[in-house]
Image (cartoon, rainbow, N blue to C red):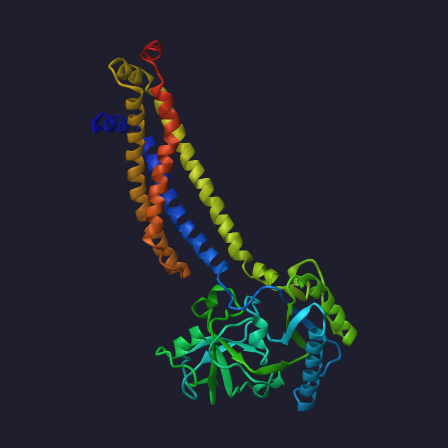
Length: 420
């Protein structure tokens, strides 16, 4: 079998050839970029938070009739109420540890700011999220201290929610330490969380993701600063770790214990994430990445539909051509062509069409990615996605053409000539 007869046959069906070629090209371009987006979304969903997520839950509550002023007396009163709540939670039989904290990774409630290396630095060296807590923050959250020391009880102070943050010491994540001090000598160095007050780095934790899972924090999602300060306000958040296997029981008993300690508070309950004040960290993670998960599923469905439509198009067009060429197939069989020869003919014909389609599709895929990089600040797609897509489309095409090609190979010379 030579290529000229195949080319001659294709020239007689230009419209069908062009249709399938363009369909393969568009499918390849869209599928490659869709799979790339899916991969990015999955990477985001599986990104570790840096904390030990097992048996962890969060309570958000507000007091009724609590002090609202910024004076020392009001702030001290709020601080005493907060510490009483923490003590109540720690005394529960199903609770292993409990701390007050301003936010958690993935909670989408972010305290953030610029970090400088000099006083009154006009342009920040790095952006970072701030976690306010106590000396219990690292063990309670399961953070891994890789250098330096933890806070001590004497390091911890408290301030009103609208107070001016001037921490003398801080603990930072390794990513932030490396960003600020690329030589790896961040421990003991001075940074400026506040523009005119120095803070000394006394410890470095392996990682702690920022509270926001949104794209605006993508460039600094590992940059976190731990500050030894309790924030005092009319509301409070408590991160509670239950004993292994007792998460559900602890989540039920914690609000009851808080109400028994002081009923003048609001802790909402409901079936939806937004309607309740008590969340397991698993629910926080699920809620934070619901859009990414939905996007990945949508892209996956689109890819499946496109691939099915393309395969159906190849099957339909090849079946149409087989019906039109029964006479030629019968003549070739009469002249000695075997079933395998007929099968290879249609597979080679389809491979040529698909080959042109995937070349055009590869160019379109790269161009589409470059356009999305410009319009949506997406990352550059690896050419490996295009290569895998090309192979997948060629295999799909060969698989789709196999059934009608096999049917053509079974046409006998006698059956074909009877229709003349």
